Image 1 (cartoon, rainbow, N blue to C red):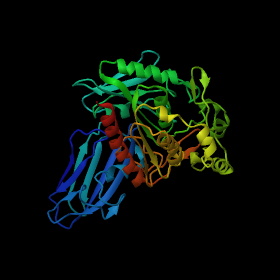
Image 2: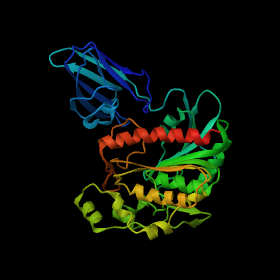
Image 3: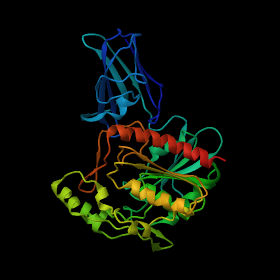
Image 4: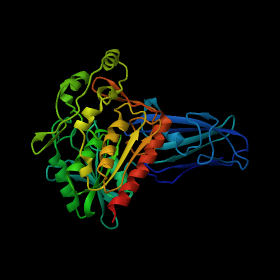
Length: 416
């Protein structure tokens, strides 16, 4: 029995080909996958297959008869991994076994930073970031990539995108040394400086940049693009066409943060208006009970008037706009919040391409690059766990599709 996992040196966003040969036709074979993440936590999944008449099992062709996922899915043994009570280190490994028979094993190192990509720490003009670009070849289109409510730097995402032919600036705008600790009164001029700096870099071609972000980063991307004319393409992932209240992490636990009335953004020294948080009884009850909290409860989207009053002027964007939302988004109602932007673009007869796609069954966590576990549907927050919503299958499919669409969007609208 021979087990192959290819390609030999994949990046995290590379689809794997897992294939087993030299198996007795009709035998049931169990495949178990294991991998340690960046925090050295162990994840694993398993699936049982029936070998075909030619003695093979091919995950691009075969559906498991039992296991942690269903249906034909080449990456099912990745996204269906669940977190185990173990730590350590090691590559992505698949083990194949037949009852009372032989076994086989294959491993690949899935690179967080793809080969052939240069990473440079950015410490200029007050910016905090990491620049990633292909080591060889000509200058590439520039893209600014920002995170969401977690803040910080997303340099792994930037490196993965850079491998597809872009020069990507992972830009921290809060939640990292050198920038505000919370999403409070962040000056839009900071992003304007980043745009100027990136376009002046020798590894960047053209006179327009792309902008991409997830969740609050999607809100930021639309806002920045509507403010600075040198943004030529935008991707907002589970984002918002509405300006929303700031996040003062120094205020303490979740309910205290929601009650701290602060703006997220300023422009020319003045705070921008925003949709304030709501604290309905259901949210308070979940917090008191220690249950996972769907933060969407804090965003009042039922009344269209406040949404319109605090809408981003997306019609000012001088470029293509792609809005990608999740049907069962528990972080906030990204379909409704993004549709506010879509409505404004349509009403203004926006002269550039624009599109809004809602992924059926998917939850809030569609923003990371594809091919990571999606079985954990909660994330830590200030004194609570946040529920993300959606099913693991739908969220995994949405991650893969949004990544392909985002890369294609920038390739089409930034390369002239």
